Image (tube, rainbow, N blue to C red; front, side, top):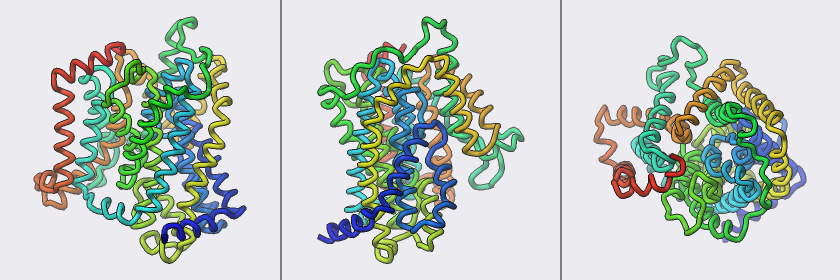
Length: 504
């Protein structure tokens, strides 16, 4: 009963003309920056923080939250249509989503992403409203050792995630981990592997690598082909809506992705990226139905699962922020900044001292998710029109947008050169049939793994036993070891190679 009263307070706070207008503005901006490759929600929210000075606190936070989860929707659009993850959480959507577009099924892929995101967003918001305090206690149980073990499990999962050769998958993860070491040492503050290049002291930009490897690499591979052999997306589009069979396949994937994303989103550092990777790994491990398209060739579960997981993770990542005042990722850190601007102390007292803000923000997520579906589903036809643009016009536009997007994050021309360099690297991966997704997961998780491992060892005075003496971290490491043994077992290995034989 108390929950219903609280939600009624939230609806009365949100359903004013001003707050609805700012929710719509946030959703629209979020979708646009998600669609434009490389810009992302973090720099956009950072640029808009000064604007929120003049807004009421509820309106300001509703708009910024709309940008955050709106960008999760928009990021899938370019991932599916032009093989460019607009957001880091859309990296795995590229794998099957772009293949669906190549097969003339861009409409069902975009619809699966939109509907899965809407369902997961609504469920994530419900979990946020009902279970925020008890779920926060669970997040409290995770120390540095548990985070390190969770990320080891994530990397082992990436081996399962990768198509083709196990050796290549492991090599790509190791390369990602090595690239993640470039930058400033977490403990000593000393620059390492920067080769006296000042721009490398902050590490290699994830955006530069993702755009180079996926976007520019694909463009170079296409331009290397004779014009008549180029892989164009001009095949006739076979319907804009998923078929009954598609719905039958994607519905369980949406449920699984929503559950996984809701759980991982609560953990600081988990959020939408880890949720999407974990969901794709899970879907790939499950037995395929008879006649189902193989993963890596346009399986709709490979779009619906990760897209649901990243939206559920985006919603539940507000739990540690609103209940503990702990930002779980860069966007949540900016939300703390927005609250501080309005003299609101993030933490448990927000629920009691600013109930209109707390419940208004939660209800605005339901309203925002509805707005995003209304905004995105009718635009599927418009996005599909992108596929009819001649490639000689399309690829310079992609190159230009990528360059603008990567430059706008740091106002640094060095990042543009890095995109170009990793474009060549991406082309080499293409020629060697190496899957780039594990490299990106290694790059994302590597610095976080190192930081948590070193913090755990500092707290235990160098005792490595801390990783196995705590039940949660020991359980996660055992799960990772079992997963690795399963993948290396001859019977599983043979089945895996059989499944990916077409990718050679």
